[in-house]
Image 1 (spheres, rainbow, N blue to C red):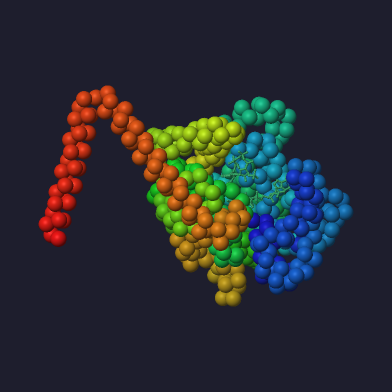
Image 2: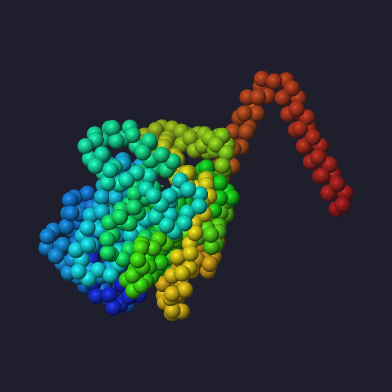
Length: 493
Ligand SMILES: CCCCCCCCCCCCCCCCCCCC(=O)SCCNC(=O)CCNC(=O)[C@H](O)C(C)(C)COP(=O)(O)OP(=O)(O)OC[C@H]1O[C@@H](n2cnc3c(N)ncnc32)[C@H](O)[C@@H]1OP(=O)(O)O
Ligand SMILES: NC(=O)C1=CN([C@@H]2O[C@H](COP(=O)(O)OP(=O)(O)OC[C@H]3O[C@@H](n4cnc5c(N)ncnc54)[C@H](OP(=O)(O)O)[C@@H]3O)[C@@H](O)[C@H]2O)C=CC1
């Protein structure tokens, strides 16, 4: 989301003179190398065309959320406090399996520290915090309010400080209670911290639901496996065949460009109107333009059949079911059995088996996502509508977050194609070869199934007289039918 925010600010807000990005070095790359890489990415193509010198506006500030004072140097603190007008806080750990201590550090303590830095900013007009629509997923109906936290954040921070990691791990399920993971739990605490520690700062909280590829700018752009993207890819590659989800539950996907347009607009509104208390914006689609997981399954499958991914493992054919036993059956038949066979083939041909390992990871990921695809929530999104009504017609177009205009089948198609182009870096010109590969897979499947049926039948009739009788009866019936057909066609000639 950070990248999309930067791109939109550069493209649609030309009077913004500088963007200060908090960045950490990672995976052997320095902070500056990472920023340079980001600016080279396809997402920035249009900005690069419009203004080749756009990089002059970007100032990278070294920061690490786990360090005291966010690891920002004194000189940088001085620069930030003197120059920043609006803070957009979207850094977080979004992993569902993050140990509680780490999630607390990144999502709650870092938010506290950023707010304390913001308090020192001399020209600050607004602080926008990105939360999640699932921060209160233990409720069915979610209003645009900050709910009482599951525990007082400061008390939890103090208690976890002295506790051993293993003790924290043991008590985590008791602490998170009816939330599914440490992510949603710590995001709820973070909202509370924002409310408690904003002081005189004007604050806005954005709660996006499941963020997906961009809708309009640019079409279908996405660059990671998070949320449904990994699932779509796994289904497109023919690896994922079954998953537990409710066909009729609302799939509350929200395009990333919609979230960013709303975030920027909320930044403007908060800075100009300075609401007395933090305004919360539920940034969701379900209440306005609902679409369901069953429909998503249909359009994902149909898109990948027409626009296949390269080197698919099997033909894309995935189904969702809410029935636990049916899902387990298909996992056995369509995931584990083919994985075992393929690994056996790899072993026999002297290669390292890998399919079972891939499936184990996939099952772990799916297990963590199922909670969100099996249930329905209702979000009130009045503040989103209010914000829209504040925009001029021109701004409404530039910062479009009117999801009533979203055509779901079209969006899902562009999303799937986006995963192919931008996540997997596959070329669209290779589609004919990918289709040819699918045809080859289909022929292998037909041959395999035929051999299997004949084999089972041969074993069966070798052991049972009744099966042999049925077999001869069916074969003789076929012969009779064929000879009748031949005779009647000779007569008509
Ligand atoms: C039947 C098919 C038809 C389709 C229709 C039905 C679709 C139903 C889809 C349901 C989706 C529901 C999504 C709900 C999301 C709720 C969102 C809540 C809103 C938010 O606020 S949070 C943002 C969402 N957060 C996430 O999505 C993070 C989830 N991911 C994780 O927690 C971890 O990545 C995970 C899954 C525990 C895996 O951990 P680990 O095994 O340690 O692996 P890594 O993360 O290190 O990744 C290694 C490697 O794998 C790639 N990767 C990551 N996730 C996936 C994935 N889901 N599928 C495939 N590949 C994945 C990752 O990029 C890494 O690649 P490298 O190349 O970098 O090694
Ligand atoms: N994706 C989704 O479906 C949803 C996301 N959200 C919220 O939106 C926000 C952005 O999410 P999204 O863009 O999807 O997630 P990403 O994981 O892509 O982005 C999170 C950002 O936080 C930074 N970060 C994480 N740990 C540290 C650290 N220790 N020090 C410095 N920076 C760090 C990451 O930097 P780095 O690149 O160095 O890792 C990354 O830029 C989050 O607050 C999330 O909770 C809300 C609803 C849905």
